[in-house]
Amino acid sequence: MESVLFTKHLAPRVDSAKGHLDQERKKLQSTKVLQDSPEMKLEKADFFPPSDSPNVKSHDAIAAIVPFTTKNTAFQDLTGHFPHKSTRGNEYILIVYDHDSNCILHCALKDQAGMTIAGKKSN
Image 1 (spheres, one colour):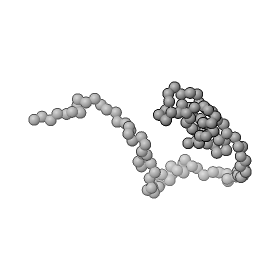
Image 2 (image 1 turned 90 degrees about the horizontal axis):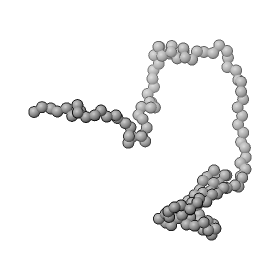
Image 3 (image 1 turned 90 degrees about the vertical axis):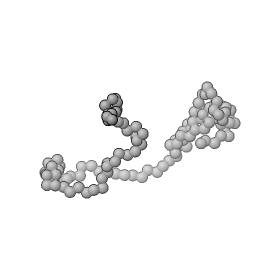
Image 4 (image 1 turned 135 degrees about the vertical axis):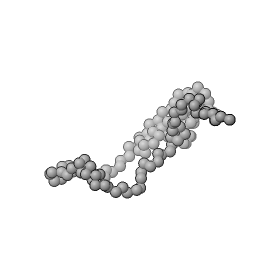
């Protein structure tokens, strides 16, 4: 019986990373300490030659602690009517941005009535 070469009749395929995109590639951060050979030391000396002049301080860096003052501001927007009701009967979304906490909150609403908006707690 002859052996059949299936790969001979198949179209060439392109390997891809499909299905493995959430994984980190291997061997990126090796923990092995590499010993520098004399040739490598000469290459490093060529790339980073010593400076002829001494290091002179040219800039000052200053850090300061600034007290936080609250602005007590928030912005809100009620979206327009959605074309379909959700399974829970909601037809609107209330979006709120709080400036002090830099937070965006959202809340699903059944209608635009003021009592509905006032009585609803955000997610």
